[in-house]
Image (cartoon, rainbow over all chains, first blue to last red; front, top):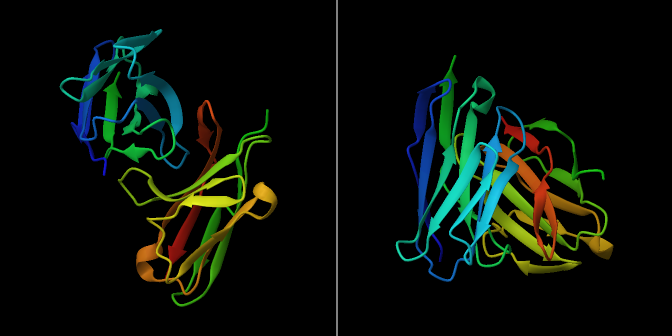
Amino acid sequence: GENVEQHPSTLSVQEGDSAVIKCTYSDSASNYFPWYKQELGKRPQLIIDIRSNVGEKKDQRIAVTLNKTAKHFSLHITETQPEDSAVYFCAASIRTDKLIFGTGTRLQVFP
Amino acid sequence: EAGVVQSPRYKIIEKKQPVAFWCNPISGHNTLYWYRQNLGQGPELLIRYENEEAVDDSQLPKDRFSAERLKGVDSTLKIQPAELGDSAVYLCASSTAAGTSGFGPGTRLTVL
């Protein structure tokens, strides 16, 4: 079955700097890769997703890149702000049926 | 559009007791998921429904866990009897064929 690895487990950056979180997946049939942001005690919120027919997708300060050959995808946050502090999860699935989540990255943005 | 609704938000029980969680998905969403999230980890799928049919329950510990989705709308997840290791947040999500719509607020279960 699918296995998703996520790095780093914690990431601390200064406000205004960029943050990059990387994930690798094992099942080459996976074709849907969402990213979720989860604040303490709250539900995971979908922030961006990408499908395997696209190499990059951007939404304001957030971008996701996908390398199908290497089976890895990354989340890029530019101009980080303190409110970006949260745990971020990547996930992979075939279609959207059975998301397999990574172990999470705790991002801290210091003012 | 109302989001996924779950209740209760918190539940504290003693081990060996039964417990049930309820989920009301977004109207019109045929697919419903139950996930379990342990502290510091990502959500893990327990069961997925397409309408009233459980199409993937491979990760559901069937000796103590059960779920139902009568009429293909609301769903209930039950644990009987609960064990200490069942303490976690139980998340419900729903979606259309276009993709996952999002998660409910979750039920935080503490088993003493």
